[in-house]
Length: 172
Image (cartoon, rainbow, N blue to C red; front, side, top):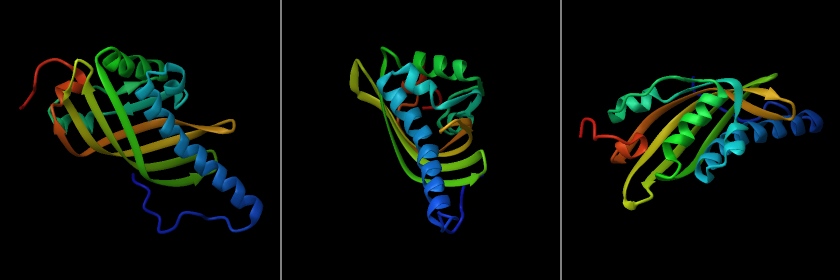
């Protein structure tokens, strides 16, 4: 569920506050690694965003834009599937904004808005622009955090959804 707390920080003393700020930064960085790893086609950076047993659920967005999608399970499956979809075919840019974080020991929740632009490399006039709401669960992995579950729900989109997955133009 989305992070809707009325405030950001819970710590007030310097040492706990410093730890909390560091954790919040690392939580948000997991989503930054997710976006930039895709945009650069950097397998190592993209994979570093996920726990080994992570789940990525794009089905809520896919349903809204008229495309079928399956639940992706496992870091390697997620990385292989997403990078294969775009490499050599689609240029992507992801912009992450409005991150909200809730820390619970070695677990965290993150809500953010992510704008994802997908343009065909052969013709940047053909694309899909999506504004999505992310619901993310994370776990601590040493000093960094990794995403264990990501649910992507679409707020709005414009363009051709088939640019994302290829193939025909469903429902349009």
